[in-house]
Image (cartoon, rainbow, N blue to C red):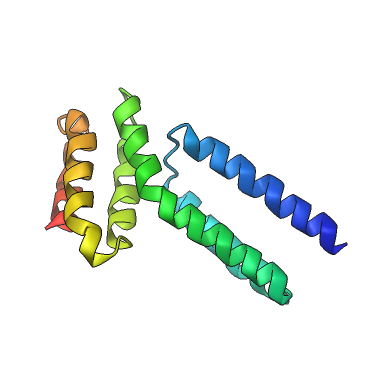
Length: 128
């Protein structure tokens, strides 16, 4: 049974990585659902399962900003609401890396500034 669960976790994790590698930027709701899923799956989990969940969560969160930036760089009509995910990912960035992240965010999202005017203004407030 544990092997089946581990295989399912690996399959789900790899599909998330594949989608993210293509420059997929999840919505705030998707990130929230993912967090709830981790909390739910951690209830009653063994130590090995918890370690796997932690690795999955760390990988997902560490790749969130780069994947969203790639999404905005490669998608001409990007979903403006995804800028809120960029804001959240920026807030999770370690302090010593925030200046570089800010520059990367502004560069990647600049082409969407006019079309995503209100979301872009909210993003700029978060970056200050």
